[in-house]
Length: 111
Length: 118
Image (cartoon, rainbow over all chains, first blue to last red; front, side):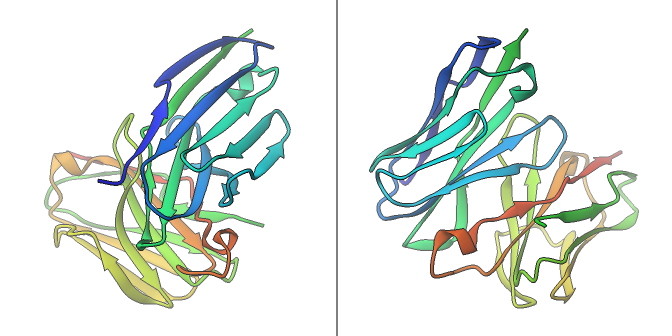
């Protein structure tokens, strides 16, 4: 069965301590991979769309990369306001109507 | 502008009530979605509309009834809900369901409606 797995489930960082979040997928035929940030009680906020292996996208302290089997969200010198749950979701070419979400990584950044 | 708006922000209803959730976007998107999200879980797809026509119903109970009056609006009518239906209800939109590139399929979410069923 096609799956999306995110790790770690939770991550605690000191302010300024860079790290990476992982999203791995067993989907055959990736059509697109999407990263979202979600604050408690709010809707997911779109961050990045990736679809080609080797692709990289950046936004402020965030950088998303994609390989054939996984994506990484790198957070450089995080600040407390980066604390949120980060979700990845994939669409594949054989079932294009649906986004398949991972379970998310809960990031806490302490000052 | 990638804004999707939802009203109300919060809703408390009894199991015999009828209420509606509303969603609006002015990005010219022709695909709109309803999701349900429980605490510490990812969003679960409920319905998909494409060009104002229902495209997907993920086996959602009939007490949830979607409606797409025009290309900018999406409603979710609620009737005889159960306490386990309490959740965050999210609306999203994308340019279309299948685009030339995944950028056109990117879904933008609204802030959600927090629903509590007593």
